[in-house]
Length: 233
Image (cartoon, rainbow, N blue to C red; front, side, top):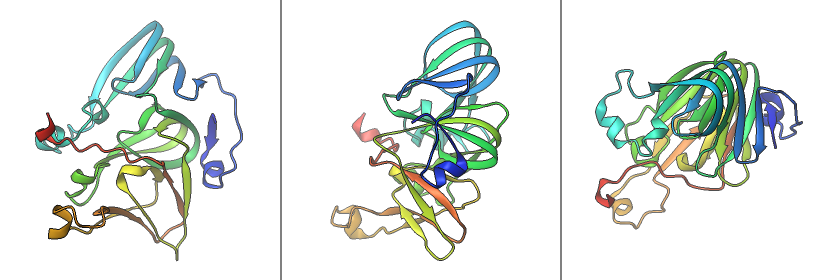
């Protein structure tokens, strides 16, 4: 797999495209030929050649609060880096596979930990799940990108695309949810009880609910937990 349009991705019928800007060296390494600027995930750079400068942007610095920053696990998953200049940049993220999506005046939301890189032509905004309990389930912060350009996301295993229809809702595990159509507004459903905290519940205390509009949800066959339990430090 290399590059997909949003339409191809939603129909599970992707065609490989060739562009010199974003390319896959292998299924886990992204190559970007920079002549200008591009956004990348902090800590994802593994090598570069040429004259490239890196400037950090904190996703959690827009009035969200230091408390959330401390609780959001993964550290580097909460920040973006603007890479600018001219040269060749290689990116990877903990051995996860890379998917490149070619967007044409569209929008997509991506779990903050699964963003790898995107073109500067795409407008981006940081979204916070409505319920604070989302912190405990992971996927608290999401990056919404819209416009035309390339975006690279990461995942474990092989991605699974679920179709959302007006009369058919989809419920997913936040820890396995990678991305979804930008016009969808998922709700975080909680099912917490005394039995859950005692370890006697069904193990699925938090779910994301997608409904009301047509679109897609991209999930992975892996539960990636972001919550930082300080008791384990």
